[in-house]
Length: 532
Image 1: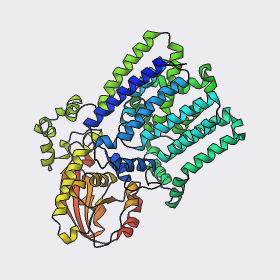
Image 2: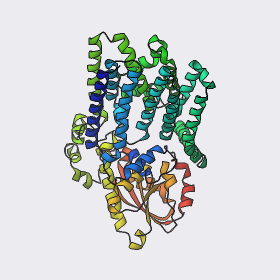
Image 3: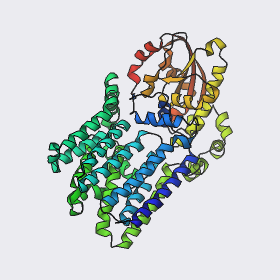
Image 4: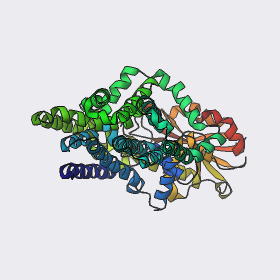
């Protein structure tokens, strides 16, 4: 059966997605997590301290272009986003949905600010979603056709998903529950165990790397739970989930989660429904943050759209009205969360230009003002939540200031100089944007950068960088580094006019000499700060 209308809907909405992604590229730069993942391409390994290895491989490929552009560094992210759209449509068709269901599911994705953000930035989140939805598609196909090759295909996708983000194990656990409930005879089939072996073979290099590095993924999750998840406000987290996936779209994904597993429409794919619901409940049980739900909600949107089409497909005005409302709410929400508007227009649209005084009227609308103004107060910021809107300016200013300090060093000290930053984002930004100045390598004890600290001796001169609330905080902030040097002086404060929180209103730059530790000693001293 040829489904021309369904594929036409997929084609049109994929084109819309591509246009939105290109517009976002024009209006934004790279955020803090992105630049770290880009730098991972310079450190190929089977694992990293704070993320899985697939992102590093993709970054390595992107870095081969030798072009420092947003378009290049978003190339694979956008390709993944497009494939997600295609497979969501294909999953709806595989479930028996028609063009109305395809339209509803894909509109929900376009209208959700959470997906707009994660489909635009170079992080593991988009690849995590990619392998969830492709894996779910294959699982649905297996439920319908019972072909053994689908089990092997599913094992490969789950293995690659693990190499993207360990959270794919939640889907694996959900599938395990589904097998025990609806398909226990699989445990006696040879092909099932072959698929298990294929999955284990794919993930084994990373598991071995983890074992050699004291299982940093487990340490990361443990630190996250102790510092963040255990304090999570359940109601507020739920509100964020509904808001970031679009409150109207909740009608669709809730129907997929809570109705689909128990109706005749999905009887022949009951195992897939159980895997989906089981995955959701596991995240709920372990108090996952709102964005942890995004991959499973993709699958629920596909299922829910089929359910709603089945029960309301003949009521055209109901579906048309809902689609129009969904589209309108999506435009409204996405303008708040993604760089669809140029920065100046975004500031006006958000009403951020209403600050009192001349700074609110003119300072933040000129690049020269950003460069010149290094003595402003933190309260003079126009805070913007979406980092990619403004971090490019911050890193340009930071690297220029670091370069000034570096160039004024005697030649003998420049030859043996490194840059040490308090946070991984600063190290990544300097390494990426400081190339034009030929700055020395920036390192950090934070996150994956801990594993990339270069070897150096005590004769090394260090330029140190950290965030601060005001220049008056220079001594307190600098104390993090100061104990490691005989001489440690504050050199400059660089104002960040769009920083979203006061703590990041300034970059503080220091010069350290008379280092008390070599590289290995420094790693031991600061090893407790890896996952702070």
